[in-house]
Image (cartoon, one colour):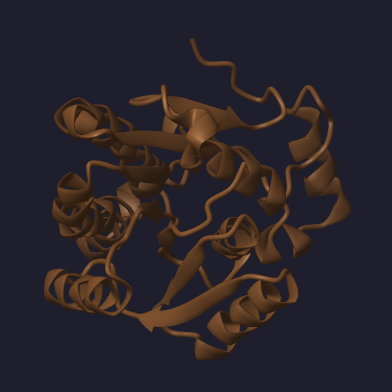
Length: 249
């Protein structure tokens, strides 16, 4: 699988799953735009790992929930690089809390970043993809969008919303040879899970038939497949990467 000559943009690409996706796509030959909003040092570390893997990348700072910033930044990338072939909508935040106590702002900020952000970024890249008659849009959902999770009604709603967005976009864009798919990770080893006690980690693993947490690289491998020519006949689908924790139909 090669992505030579392709330009990719990974939102929230400075750490975790976004970093693994950025490094993997760059290692396959794509030039990768690493989007970040608040942590330039983390974005620079992603670029360092991209270069160590023999790839090329650049950092781009904008907030995916800011429509004007999205438009301006994506226009600038297309002006500099001529195109954006692959968009990975990975940027996401959490504002956890029980629904009875959840503030409107905690709902709005999660929906704006995790769902509206994917809409804004996709809308901004699709014209260039349609013109080229080639494109890949990959939305990073979550197992939580399928099974729910107490204390995360905002996050679960946003991640579930991505699957509907994916299917509708896939129908609209298929005629222009643009595929749109979802990757839904389960429990993945991140900074957040590293901070959990061994007992809590064991309880998580007990819910997973394979008995282990996933890695960001497991998710990146699924994204890489969908971005490559090997995934060209797949659109409107959700690929679950969760060790069997949820087995969708």
